Length: 627
Image 1 (cartoon, rainbow, N blue to C red):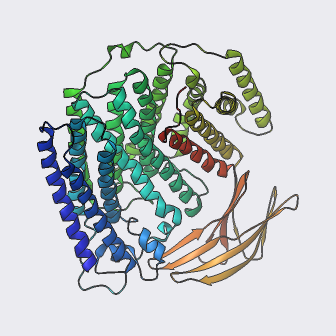
Image 2 (image 1 turned 90 degrees about the vertical axis):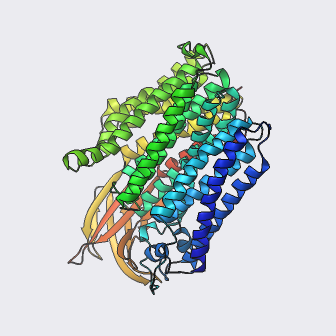
Image 3 (image 1 turned 180 degrees about the vertical axis):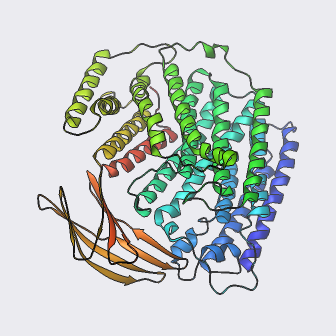
């Protein structure tokens, strides 16, 4: 109970710090001193401390299983392992918003500490805009999503956390994702401050790039961890399902990627300033829209936390206020710094980055329409539909071909004006890519023409980046590694989709299921009892026609609190493929339903995303990006 009171009053004190910081910022803005008053930095640190105390209080309540706290009662249980008690702190609506607030206050404090060389008024305005966002989240937490609501009489036992959320990857996934989302708030606040001060310059681009990189890296890794969790925990056998909440995390990633490339143009030539501000506003807007869609409960997804229209309305109103404020500032204060921005030569690095942005905006439009169209249709006509993978594949995949070709050629162009160098080398690589693709695909019964073009483009990017990495004296290393990672990612996805196989059948213990490439033997089952669940483990042998044996042991778990049944897949991973087996009970008889899948190159999908993130990390730590 004491932890509840400390956590609640710490939030109130943090909110009071926000109001005081806002007033002090306005006063300091008109002060003639060239340095920011140290009291403002101290107060920002104090605000951060109050939110940390509040967050630690909630963790303590979860660890102690203090069921007088409504959030703990709804999302924990005495038999839950300690690790999941701690991660359960942010595995729910109220706790996740408190984590949002913690990262918001942490980032603005770090911004003040790390921007000492920047103009004072720019720093103060960034703080002021960020405090507006922080005040909104403080009010949201305290008014609609208080994590310290008191229950009386105190329940003896809690309701428990959804077992599919009790997973190490999902424990780490939300904090990393929020670091990416909240990083976009600093970009948003700093962009509005820079526009107001007419400071959207090369120097500002160099300064803001590290915040764009930080946000992009965390968002990339956060999405990857969520994808890994979905792959082995949900039992669907895939890594991306175009679930609405997956799309919500992908959309700001697309705009951040576009923004990161445009910042490079700003650093070099001081152009595209208006477009950079628009991308900064759009990125944060999409992050906030994601929060609205998840918290309002209007999306039907395994990710959604709440089904409370009041919460959704609060965020929607807050989002509209921020958007109108941002657009008002943009139209009132924005000035294009270089009228030569319209004179970008058609063949140059700048033009290739612009084309990159066009593709990113197209992909964003497809994902956005696919995500929100069912919502609007439901509101207008009460007709419920779902937009699945075929919609996205048909609209996105054909445009990947020119996108990959531009990615292969664009980075080799020079700034201002260029010409395509090493043409013969590129032609040879392209011919080799097409030949290799045709050789690989000729024995596969698929649409040979379409896949030859698509995979050839992916191979072309792969080999050009590989050549540049090893034969160009390590110039532009972060960029090359990131692009190489992306090409590997596309290739892994394509071959994973083409070569995957699946067998679904019902089988009894002791039976054998024969298929074209071998047979599946269901040897036995074993029952196991843990502290918070009972389980049935199935033992299977997968024997191919060459006599090679793979043993897999999927599991069905019966949790006691909440009472729920989950299927735990067993996966054998090698460099070339994953063998994936999941089983379920068929009610009313002695059969078990099994799904056996062979998923080629799954490991390389994760490795490629890590390479992509590593390229960003290298750039963040000031490796030489340009020659």
